[in-house]
Image (cartoon, rainbow, N blue to C red; front, side):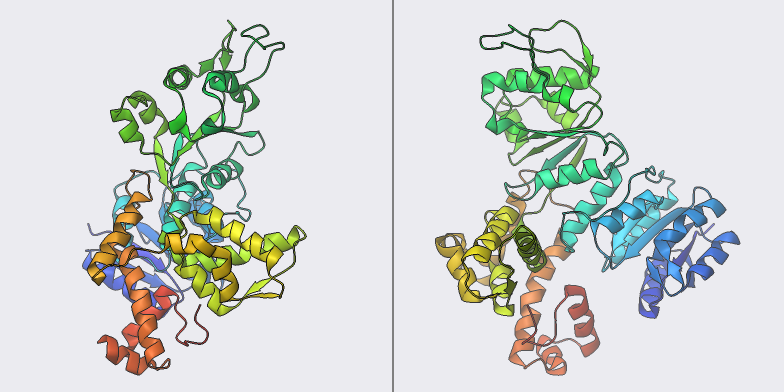
Length: 474
């Protein structure tokens, strides 16, 4: 029998587009625009899968999920939302949603999610954690992929490996996984492998007994013992010496560890989250990282995008850093639109950390209340010149260089699915903006210049988050 999909959204255009896509995929579709209508359909036994928006005229689709599941236990519910934050993704998972799709979403992605739901894959396990605001910021498609992975791993103890360049916020992600999960009340302990002398790493991890080595005057607890019941974050795992890797592997296999110089085994009740900016596969091939340890740590890979791969998030990040600086006692500053555009176009080799440091520096050094484009360019200084891409003879060469840099930013891992649409949007955005600028914001003329109809242009402006007015864009 043909499966029936119930779609709840108050936007008639979205209902129409989703119905057409699902009908083409061979499903029957029932539509509603309210929570009451959704509850009525589910209560009457209609629908094999539910797709619901969050904000509906008579209530909240997220809040309705427990009631829907009480009516139909095991019903697969897919949440779609324009409120594209980590908090929304986590609440969807917490309330028992099967999947979460941030708007605007790819229709092929929607049909794939529906197909997975119908195959009988168990929905993510619910948990008891709250969904408070997170320090993770960004509504770009690349960050939505990150949020969805975080939302799915927080309720359980699966081992997570965070992959990404230096400065992308790997420890923030590790803390989010801990703070939103069932171990939140217990310690979060971090150890940076690159910052510890090689001969002391085993002692730092497992602790040592008095007299275990020269200078061990007293017993010391290691990170595993300090993190009992909580989360142990192993940063820069690629810098771990091979002999310490062997001991760590044994702990992961047995769930027990002994201190250096000790004889009594202790239970290792910790969740392991690791991170690296290195190509671990290359280290394995060079004999510098154990392959069996890699597969133990890499149960759930979580690639973090470099900042250049999510330039649309730069303005929100910059403003947040200025707000935080003001709360810490630094002068309160704002960015003018031209300054925002300079920030957006910078390549950010130092990623989010570079942006944060720049905002703090400008908050201290800039005399006026408003940070200008000239101030941003001065603050970036020689780094801006060093980060500037090498001129290419053709647009194709420039695009090839950008795409190669994008893939390199994932430290040897593959980027999230949907890379075609994501990179295509990066080309569309400046092209459409340039046409709007050239026509003084006249959408009809810009559409003619682009060779598309006006409605298509309006949809793309919405999807890309572009302001049609040149003076306000940024």
